[in-house]
Length: 280
Image (cartoon, rainbow, N blue to C red; front, side, top):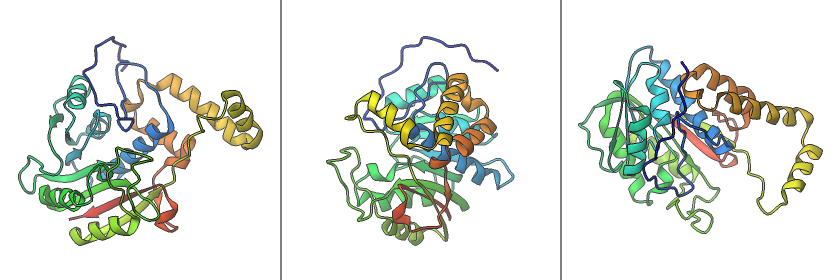
């Protein structure tokens, strides 16, 4: 089904550079960070599919809602919660449907009863909480999960596990890989670890022409061809990706292999982001 592009005045969304926006009714900037985030949701989609049943899913810190909507496309009953009222208003205007709902709330004090969800998803949320709040948040996830429930979460990790506000002032504390896994293993019976190696952005200080020449001259032809293919795919399908999860899987696995979620075979400190699957 083709959705007609519409010029709609967007509600105010706190744009800290951390907020990723996918507008199902308009043009989108599909950069590497966006695809890395979508790859996590596709990973969560595969985890949910392994249950072979309809799940009640919570997307904690859902942002602008496209991931919550993607999960709902599989028939699951999905709820997204976020502290930013503007993001929640945007999510409702774009993605609300009978099995996809959104509300405003604090992830460290979830407004749900115990044992409410079969699965909780939360991506790139922990680092926005103070160190002492991170175990509180994970304990809240454990509380709202059913006894056999699962959580899929991600967080960037640093070699020394220290916050670096000079580099990213919106990250309050980035746990080390050991810290993250220790907290998770204290709360959950089984923890499986995956990783992502994110592609480094091109330096903005390098002149654009030099970037283009350097890219073509030093990167293997296959990688350059893949970059061209990405551009064509993004132009052709930028407002339709969320309707076709199979297409999303193809793009992330084939054209964005560098940002895909993969079983961790090396030291966790060698990856840019850890993704944990845990069972209550």
